[in-house]
Amino acid sequence: MINESQHDPVSKETEFGREIGRQETRKLIAQRNGVATIWAGLGMSGLIGWSIAVPVLLGALLGYWLDKHHPGPHSWTLALLAAGLVFGCWNAWNWVNNEDKAMARYRANKDE
Image 1 (tube, rainbow, N blue to C red):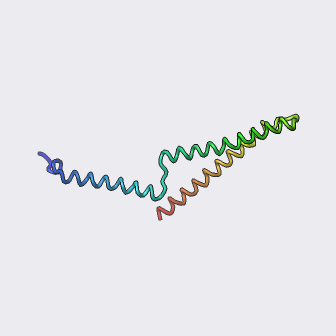
Image 2 (image 1 turned 90 degrees about the vertical axis):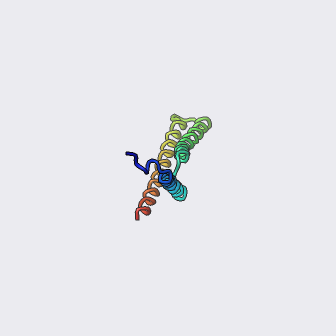
Image 3 (image 1 turned 90 degrees about the horizontal axis):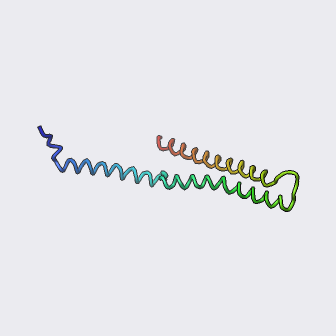
């Protein structure tokens, strides 16, 4: 026996319309609340990479300059490159930690 709802174009359109409405609602909520997209996530990972790379490069350049102008028994380049790496990693970790706390606050407020 054939189910009438399978051949009823109105019920199919209604279910299709409801699904589209649900998806559109989720999309608008995500846009309003600033939920990140894939591109935003890639941009953030690039930002984290640059927040590490820039201090490393600046430390290496300053160390190279110091080695040229004030030579000594130890390499300024290597020391300041390592210091730039430590500072960059700390900076990136601090930034990610703050973002994580902000997302946790958002989820907590959303659940209330």
